[in-house]
Image 1: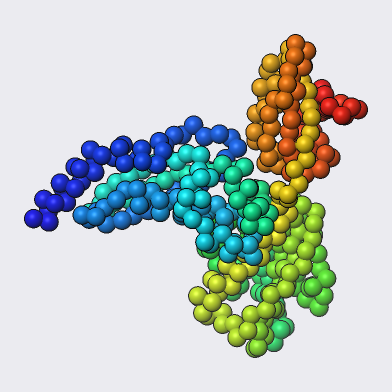
Image 2: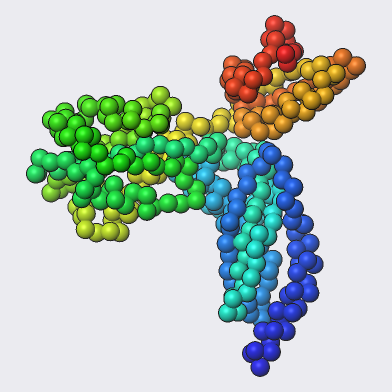
Amino acid sequence: MKFNIYYYLKNLYIFFIFLSLSIFFFSTTNVNARAFNVDNIEISRPFEINFDKNEIINEGFKKAFNELILLVVQTIDQEKTKNIRLNEIKGMIESFSIKEEKFIDEIYYVNLGVSFNKKKVYNYLESKNIFPSIPKKKKILFMPVIIDENKKELLIFTENKFFENWNNQKEKHYLLEYILPTEDLEDINLIKNKFEFIEQYDFKEIINKYDLSDSIIALIFKNDEELRILSKIDINQEVKLSNQTFLNFDFDNQLKLNNTIIELKKVYENFWKNSNQINTSIKLTLSVKISALESSKISDFEEILEKTDLVYDFYISKFNKDFIFYQIIFNGTPNLFLKSMNERNYNFDTQNKVWILK
């Protein structure tokens, strides 16, 4: 009897699949450029008599929103979003799509992609007194060096469990991609010769061998009582020192080692997010005009504005036979706007109140 009920429910589900989706809104893959796209949200649920696809989709929305928060919000502020209601999440969604769905052994599996409206997300975070960050990916050189204070020796590659396990701990929301140095006898000897003043050493001779402008050097001081980790974080020509201490650390305890790596990665991710933070409370209005005769330039400029993270909004305020006038709402200073546009080969005549795109 159970076998017949299962197939009856499965056929009924297939018949109503599109109808059930329409209860919320129709999925689409035509996503506006000004959206946060969260993909590969995987949900599974036993296919039972009380099976409700809408509940699973709703669960996917919650999971996608949590992934987004991990991506754009620093650890210290993530708790502020824990009590968000489902209707608030839905109000920020522009579209969603079902990438894949399947039944295996009476289990329903679905893979969702969800697109969140950036403007609405920023408004929500601002209401919680949270400044989000631009989710930029970054490759960075990472070099952990263990300093055994009892034995007076350095562990750089061999027997360095941080080096061996570092890239085993990966999450979808991580923005930093760590490049570990290759084992080099010359580098080993160079670092060992700096043992007495290792905290002052800048590691430039080694860093310069790699085609990366950013680096993190983690000096891991080990003794019988504690593990102290001094991180020298050098990103975008900004250097920060960070200290963490872990008591009763056991290198043979894999769980503790993994958790320590996760805690360090949180520190590094937060530093990177802080470097790319958006002050959404700043809403500078800029007036720009473009020749009405240059249709391709107008189209390209609008596309650039769509893709510029610090552009909160823009619209055409008026037009005539000579010019099209834009109002641009920017989360930053005029100089920052000009710099970001200059990087995209857009320059302006700023002599008057209304700037002219050259």
